[in-house]
Every structure is written in C-alpha cells, then in structure tokens.
Amino acid sequence: MRIILVTILSLLFFTSCTSYKQKEIKNDLQILISDVEKNNSNYTDQDWETKDKDFENILSKDYLPIKNNLTDEQRLEINKLIGKYEALKIKAGINSLKGILKDGFQQLESIIGELSNDTTLLK
Image 1 (cartoon, rainbow, N blue to C red):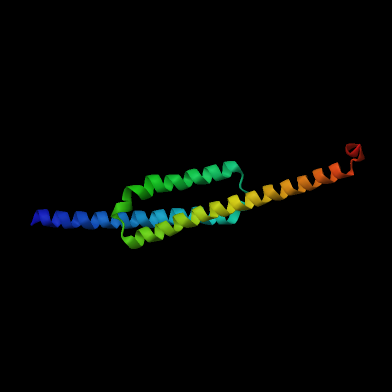
Image 2 (image 1 turned 90 degrees about the horizontal axis):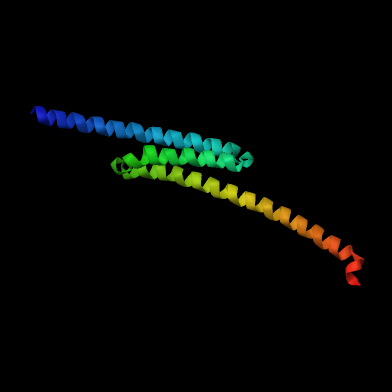
C-alpha cells in the first residue's frame, strides 16, 4: 500500500513540475518575443546573436528536457511561440535585405548617371 501511495504522489509531483516548467518556458518565450517585436527594427547583428542565444538556451536547457513529458496541447502552445520567433527573425532579415537592395539601386542609379554624363567615354 505504501509503495502505491508513494508512486501516486511521485507521479502527481512530476506532473505538476512539468506543468510548472511548461508555463515557465511559455513565459520566457513570450517575454523574448515581446522584446523582439518591439525593438527588432533597431537590432544590430550583435543584438540578434544575443537574442538567438537566449532563444537557444530556452529551447535546449528548458524545453527539450521535458518535451516528451508534455501533452500535445502543451507542445502546440510552445511550438507556436517558437514559430513566431522564427517568423520575426525572417521578417527582420527581409527588411534588412530590402534596405540593402534599395541602397544598391540608388548607388547603381548614381553610377549610370555619372557614366552617361561623362562625354570623354564617347571618344
């Protein structure tokens, strides 16, 4: 009887710890995502490296050890947050690329203008 009681209590304890840890992971991801949403337009490469390290730490140290003990619903909630972070990163990359292309086109326009105005090239 004692063994059954200890087993049941252990199971309840483990389940409650996993649930608590899952909520902590969700909270950490939500805080990270909120910060990225607000500030990513001003991020440098170093800022992104720092955020990526924070993100990877949450996943590797907190999420992966308990992933298999979570319900499908709990994993779905966390996977949505992981996807949201990845989407924010992709959007920031696209915006950065747009800026680079815009600068490149402006420079190309200037080059073409300078070359077409130089009459010495025609001789």
